[in-house]
Image (tube, rainbow, N blue to C red; front, side, top):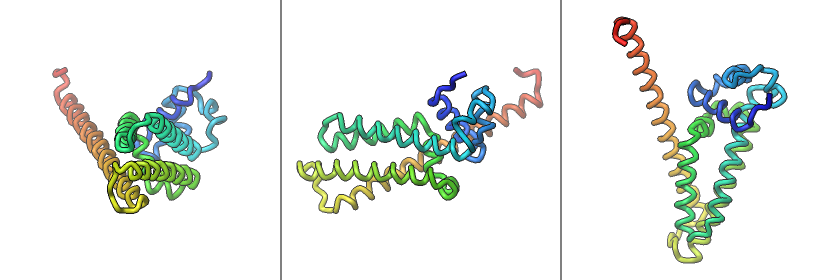
Length: 194
């Protein structure tokens, strides 16, 4: 049985988002996909390979987003706005990306994933510098700060916003879990109320 790569990545992402990074394993992924572990062994030698695949998919998604943004041929300020709106949509659709991006333990242990994340950051920095330079040439952006400094400010602000979104997602998930536990407890005490 052929397994769709996007389905594998999304399922792996859901495992991370719902249960944490350390819950992701070839065994758990196979169970969630309703396939045998052998079906995945040709794709993943170990659990780190799954995480690496997630980072590669994140890199691909961001690179595609940058390409689409460049093709808009908008004014630099509109291009910048488009880029961040689309990034926000991406992270809303795939909140597990935020989980892997902000996982210090994961990045300490997985050098391949760290390399991909560095490439993603470099692509983002380079593209932002391009937009800022174009905006300064057209006198749309009038800041006297160096482009690199502006890029760091923009990326730092966006990183903070995305981390806050990740924390809100986590709090919402935890709140829903607590509500479910309370409801289960109430139903357990009053089995006739259903």
